[in-house]
Amino acid sequence: MNPIKGLYETHLYVSDLERSIQFYKEVLSLKLCHFTEERRAAFFWIGKDKQSMLGLWEKPQDQIDIRHFAFECDPMWVLHESQTFLRNRGVESYNFFKDESQGPMVFAWMPAIAIYFGDPDGHALEFIGLLEGESKPEYGVISYQDWLSL
Image (cartoon, rainbow, N blue to C red; front, side, top):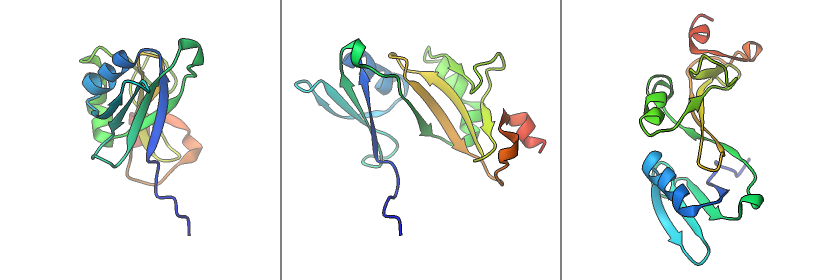
């Protein structure tokens, strides 16, 4: 039996802690649960309190490696509302291919629908929602419209 139940926390290095606190608190509406000035770190609950956590640690720019992680969301919210949510907060979104279509894409192997965006340091963030239905890995990454036609 595998004792691992899920991913509890992830951490990012950021170049300006106050700017990043503002982004994750005001733009993404995460709940700031702890701040420590002496360690230059901030922690946010993701979803329900104590369910999942994001830690931010201030470091010099040359010590920041760009990372990627995804926020789990309702798939229909990703499809219909995520881009407006981001745009209304001054954040540009992009799809998996970074092409002109700009719409959320479906990872047929899961299946899941996703849209991407960046934080102030350029970390690649994602809103992702698991879709109903069988996985179809042979279709790769496709538009939602193409997914519906399968």
